[in-house]
Image 1 (tube, rainbow, N blue to C red):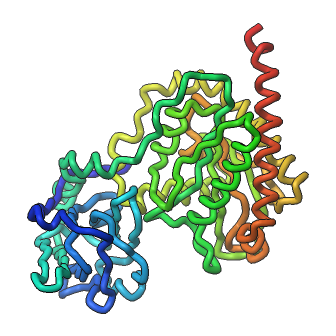
Image 2 (image 1 turned 135 degrees about the vertical axis):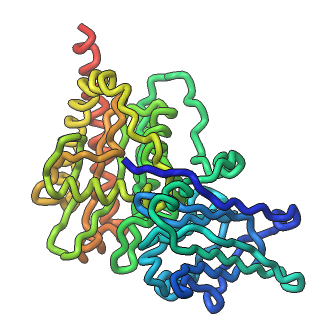
Image 3 (image 1 turned 90 degrees about the horizontal axis):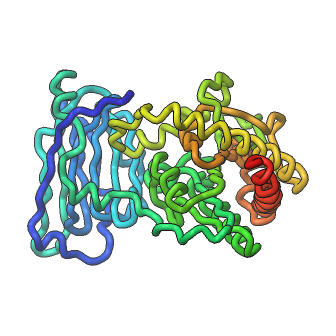
Length: 401
């Protein structure tokens, strides 16, 4: 379990600093993350003043910088990062209107100073955060998100409105994997988060055109949505089925084709274990506070609920594999898999995760990047959902008898 102890440096800005129009941009020529002796310095030149906050998190150690939205276009990780204290960093949209930079720390470093200065004539701003060496105990004691409700509420994932009274319409929640600060796999100029959003939108449009199924998305733009929130959105919408879309990537390009995963909390399959680690790493990459995320109080009740939803998920997964093959979509030589995937943990509705292909494989990547290639996947999803929904509806009276 990840432990996050409490520390922070919250920085108040003058009221005038909150009144700006447009997005702040990073001047790469004057920005760098570098070592100054034993210290780590984050030096960012901004086109204008923005509200921000800085804090560290533990296990793994990382610095989090939140901003009122920043335009990251043209910002290069490799050009920005020049530090042994910081082995890696990432940045991007967190939620609408809010951006985040996460800097990995190779040693316990605590925030010593942070300041934002503004040029009175140009309006340009300069942010500098300095971290100094510390010991493990002090770092842990001073790490954690700040108790600032204003920020926490602003950064909260948007929720769907309460679902209308059940009118019998079958509801599918489609979850485009990754997003925002977590781009997922990137190969050959194709970004998993963007590609899955495009595929999810195309699938939802096709389903909604049937007038028999209501399809919703966990995100409609390039924003980050935590794993637990994805399931919460499905629950709030009264979803009858949850489908998470991903595209894998390996170091080699031999693996190819789509696979459909259902939940197996004790799964030992190596591919499934690696998949779980890759997907669940997103919350850590985004610098989330995961304290209290392992509540097992309702385990028994969840197991009872899964006695019904797990077999239903298995039936849908089998139907989807058959539909993928029938549509001519590329499938893996072992397309039906199980794994301990957190995004499938909800017990109150059937859930599957679909790896639609491998971005590390050029043929898969080209197929998924093309409208015709995606159309085969969309067709399979629509056919499988329609057939499965009809079959489950027919089963319901039998189960009640």
